[in-house]
Image (cartoon, rainbow, N blue to C red):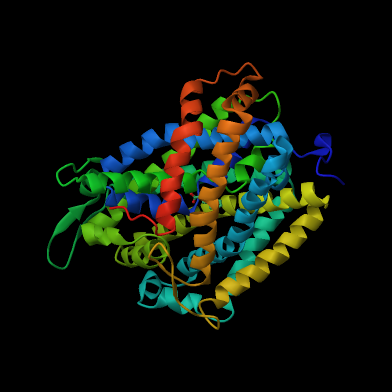
Length: 471
Ligand code: PHE
């Protein structure tokens, strides 16, 4: 079959709610939970939040709109869409499809760690899980992390195998509302916490909330301000799942009469709300138990090392809270991983004319093989390298660096050039307005895609490559 495989037989979302929840499912992931609260705490609380919101409705909105509209216009997978829109831009499709291809194996390894913690909190005691070395002890084992990887990947593959409508959409319609309820519940609980530490100092969740929300403008230098802007931009970019083919793939399943603007706004609101609530959940909790210094952890060490210590000091409530927390994280990770796999599977289907079943089988085998190599990176294949951005890396971090820090900004910059200068912004505006939908921020979109967004992305890229140092 050719690259222009029959549009009629293409899977599609049943309606805009299905699309919004599936896309929000992709956007809401580990980044919302383990990185956003940390960056907010580091960015002087409210200052980061304000900058993030401004960037969300400008920078984030521009990239998300461009990708969804491109996908719907091309009705193709990321690998084939860019070439269909413009002959010379096939290379963007290759890079955009490469990103989820690289991400899937390691994302599933992390998903496996989440499963391990969820099960551990059901059968072990919080004190055992909080013991020093528990996390490292687990990820360096020979077999266990591979088993949890396979379990996680099997769940993801099953959903993708069932297709867009019966799989991804139905799954997101159940998990996303549940996830929202859980985040709200845990966040509300976090605000009721009071803790007195061994030095006799009592701190409350509400005080932590103040740290989160009230901008601490006293010690702000231009360098801190600029770093906060770059932090917010990098986070937003990752959080909206743009520049990795996903939103192009999902856009290609949206019907031609759907109103894109409304859906795009809803996706952004959902993603930002969950990130914000993750902050309400984590910052007050960490602040009450460990003070300001406790907020230095992010990424795996926040959820697999720091929070377990807090759960252990909460008594019975700690265990219940931990189960709810890891179930919620699992939901967030599953819906994101599903979108990553779908971007690759859609590309296999459109480019090579494979059936969905075969594409799923091939990608599952690749995911497991890659995932096993990632697991062995903490065991038989252990090594340490320094990355240009200053981090120390194992296999997982190297894959993460290549995909998120290098390829994604390159894809997004190329996209801005393609739309801003070659196809012209009107191309996207017409696609959005063809249903009579009004493109409210038309002029903003044009200025953003042509000038501002590519420059901001270039700053992210140069920082990742270690060529500029900020803050
Ligand atoms: N957008 C997700 C988040 O904020 C991350 C993600 C990564 C989603 C990779 C899909 C693929 O966590």
